Image 1 (cartoon, one colour):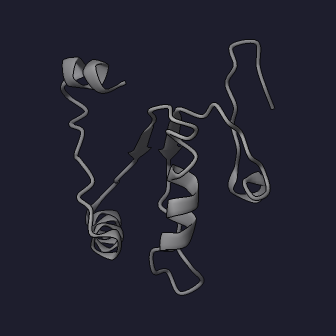
Image 2 (tube, one colour):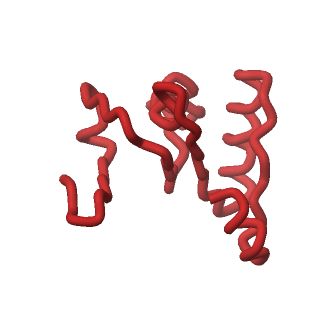
Length: 99
């Protein structure tokens, strides 16, 4: 699971029970949903909680592919009472600043 570059890829089936101390970036290709298709806020928190642990900073990126996914993200924001910042993909300079 670890390459010579230090890249770790963990899929949905292998994400539980692993505690990796040095994760600084989490990318959600799909937002987690429960069996009824509603946002799974606990799984979302578990995923993004991997970043910034042990006093280090981290970044979580969510890929949003349309209005339905955006609505799920807004429900997650409402649940936690926190705004998730939008990152415009056409502004490479802004992406460089954040990453």
